Length: 407
Image (cartoon, rainbow, N blue to C red; front, side, top):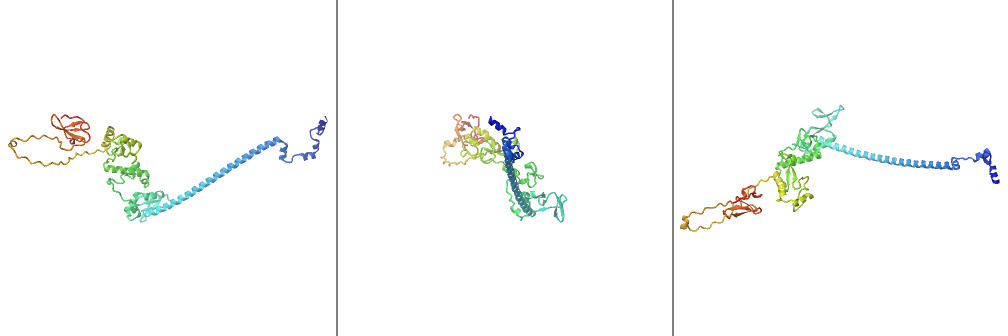
């Protein structure tokens, strides 16, 4: 009871401690900073600490983002500077090449035009005669209008070099121009594929000096020249007996169509010089081609039907009549003195030899019929016979008659 009374006695009726009852004491006991006020209120202090952690985390994230942005900007600026340096190098190289092309072109009949600001180019073609053109240069040899982009390709074109070699025999372009090669199709013009200034090999594209130097055009010209050479030689048969030059299926009825090399063993067109080659003793080419070389051989039924027949269709071979070997005739013995019987009796009749004294093709032999005593010919492989000499028929070397002949 005494302790409680003393505690209650230490406070006034309004709950204020007696020590703070005076204003001076209350002012002295008040917190002097915000931190002191937080120390007096633990709940508020915890809330402020959480807010401070969030602000710190956000500031750190913003700092990292700014650092990444700065790095990205530095990389972009570095790449841009590198690109500008590269462009400057390309432009400098381009200007140097243009100057070289311009100096060479001026010596090879190319005139440079002048721009007077009226939307056109004017070139002095001689004797104070000016001609309006649409571009910066005019080649007087080829009558073509050029600019800085097309000037180099034009003076390097074979057509321009040929004209320079003709007009200026002592120039460097004439010396660098290759000598024309002698070809079997020399009667055909080198520009037979050109018509009205257009290339018939490339879907009638214009011949502007640049198109002639493209890779596609050069490949088509090479293929066209190859066809001309083959046609001039009559499409000579390839060395390998399973290859043939033949047209595509849709062009078989056209005798003047282009022909391409085809492997009859694989029934595929030859796209190169290594895929379809070799022999049974030296297998080469693709795996399929080597297998066909092992499985099919000359003389087989499949070979005769799919290889020999197709090759003979496109590369017929003229069969020459075999020449008879010179016969050595032994000297006749001296005739005995005539007798009375031989002087009266006539000589015995001569029996035709049916040509058995001539040489026979491979596999043939002669025999004598036991009934008629006549000589006939027999093919040992098929046991077929005939009365006339095998060399008298065109098919004697290939196979005998398919019908047996009774003698």
